[in-house]
Amino acid sequence: MSNRPELPPEIARRRTFAIISHPDAGKTTLTEKFLLFGGAIQMAGQVRAKGEARRTRSDFMQMEKDRGISVSASAMSFDYKTFRYNLVDTPGHSDFSEDTYRTLTAVDAAIMVIDGAKGVESQTQKLFEVCRLRDLPILTFCNKMDRESRDVFEIIDEIQENLAIDVSPASWPIGIGRDFLGAYDMLNDRLELMDRADRNKVAESIKLEGLDDPKLEEHIPEDLLAKLREEVEMARELLPAFDRQSFLEGHMTPIWFGSAINSFGVKELMDGIGNYGPEPQPANAAERQIAPDEKKVQGFVFKVQANMDPKHRDRVAFVRLISGHFERGMKLMHVRSKKPMAISSPVLFLAADRELADEAWGGDIIGIPNHGQLRIGDALTEGEMLHITGIPSFAPELLQAVRATDPMKGKHLEKALMQFAEEGAAKVFKPMIGSGFIVGVVGALQFEVLASRIELEYGIPVRFEPSQFTSARWVLGNGDAKEKLINANKQHMATDNDGDPVFLTRLQWDIDRVVRDYPEVTLSATKELM
Ligand code: G4P
Image 1 (tube, helix red, strand yellow):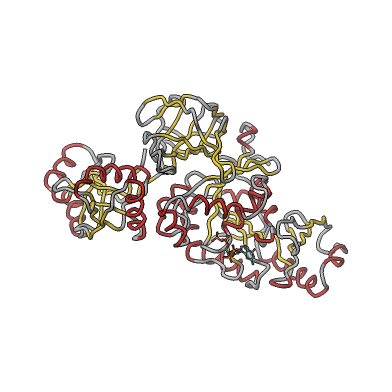
Image 2 (cartoon, helix red, strand yellow; image 1 turned 120 degrees about the vertical axis):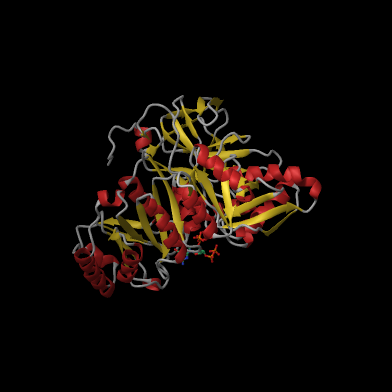
């Protein structure tokens, strides 16, 4: 079911998506089952086990584990039926919204997992809003139906009301909690029966001729069957039927009811993304739109992860390929530096292991180990000077001064800070007057994460202290007015890690004053990375 017939088949079969959810709704469990059915792991439980083995490598990761949050994102690829799925992991904590936003620029769709007993929770709502900024198509998985959960109509109503999106039931649960038997597949007219004895076993699937099919009576007790018939009839009357176009435009979400831990509903969900899409989508550059069916390889960096191996100081840039057929060893143009780059050891993320990629297609995510040349927002092309838009950097909401407890280590600290700034883990500002650095983050927890990473990865113990500033704005504009502003406000001025000027203050009044006095200049809370 292709809505882009011009796409090469290898690209048309790719589905690149993220999972958004509130902690504990079942994202990890669902991911495990995807990988299990995708043949990427032999047994469920390995994602967690591997995750933990990886985490114990550093105390920073230890901290992440202690707090039950996921700071680092990764990508996983697996095949199922005719499709290649690329699952990009979103950082789980609300403090890291900028990171999350950027991650979502690399996917074409999102799965929203909600807990059937809890409905739409705060973090789900926040992440949903981020998806909405990009009109991402969203598929919903209502999990834990094997437990006591809320009334199905109530759950659907809540999603429609809180998230202002049409909800169309793709399946309808039969029984709830202890009585949960399975679901009626409303899109394909099938009965899916959950196997409680084996959690990794796929449900038995029975083809039906509608809701009056006598086969239903063989499998479902009379009272539950009567309830199912009544509810499905009501659902068909009251709720919109699935409309693929509306789904692709982000106005409608199909919802499946299941139980990830019992592997129930997972395959139907995978079929849903596979069959309804979307396929790899175009990306916008300042110069033009880049379409996925273009022959040339084009992609952009949406995440940089530094020090995955502290011994080597390597970094991996995560690149979303937009178009083309990439082969290992290819030379690509690194647009920002205008220099060709031989991509000799790209990494594909098959399941939880890193593996060398021999080839990849538009829609895929590849990792490129590098020494710092690749930054978030950078474009890689076969020569064309394209600058990707829509990957913003947001002004930090919290600012603190940072100091090395050992003053001899000041120089090393600068290097460490620059590296984290390039990774996107924090904003680092160097004031024009005085010494030291001001670090800006979105959530307070990030200061702790940074302090522990700087100590662990660079051996520099640091202290974060209150700063005299509370807001940062990029100074945008050209020519004299900008120069004048900078010269007249030196005590407020700093530069970011790209050397761009930033206005720091603690008073909104200061911002208003500058806006009034320098109409040709803009004080911006965001900066496009390109
Ligand atoms: P998260 O990544 O979204 O935070 O959630 P995760 O998958 O870790 O699941 C959170 C808890 O919910 C886990 O229990 C998990 O086993 C359970 N869970 C996931 N899916 C289902 C389901 O379909 N039904 C039921 N009943 N439970 C489910 P835990 O006790 O926190 O962890 P564990 O001891 O099972 O590992």
